[in-house]
Image 1 (cartoon, rainbow, N blue to C red):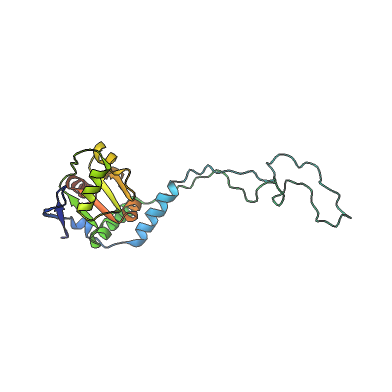
Image 2: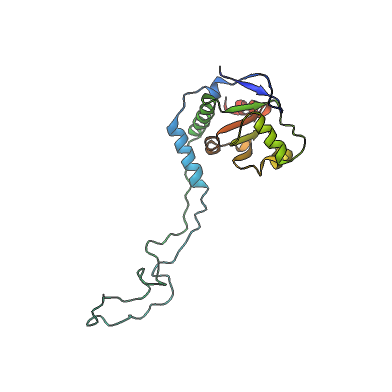
Length: 206
């Protein structure tokens, strides 16, 4: 069963925490993670982009010059895509980019991402994140104590102080256990958890 060090807010090692083998010790499935990340990014797209085709752009009803004898190419309308102010060839239209993923694949991808972080020793667990004040310098001090820069901080529930303290630090983001996703786990170098957040993750995915 994998283990990680347990730190207090000053960065001191105060013990060890055992990680669940069913969550942090599975075989990493790269294809499942790829499928889930692809779906996550696709589902962020609004799909509202739109442009006018030559049939929709205004004007161009009359033939712009006679068919023969000019030495120029034959054209009927100055609203063809090759003309300035013309329509767009293969114009984008509103569409749904949503990609659905099987629930079992989602769980497998999440476990694979968490296992990958455990294998890389990129998980830091705090007994609690009771910072003195909701200030950026306080959170920087906490992260420096455990030599962490680019990190995803996972909280068991909403904590205004920690969120405010971390939101202006480049490369650092806070999230809740309920909104944790594979893309963000892979994006950030280190996964920072509180003991309660770790317990909730294992409760959900074990």
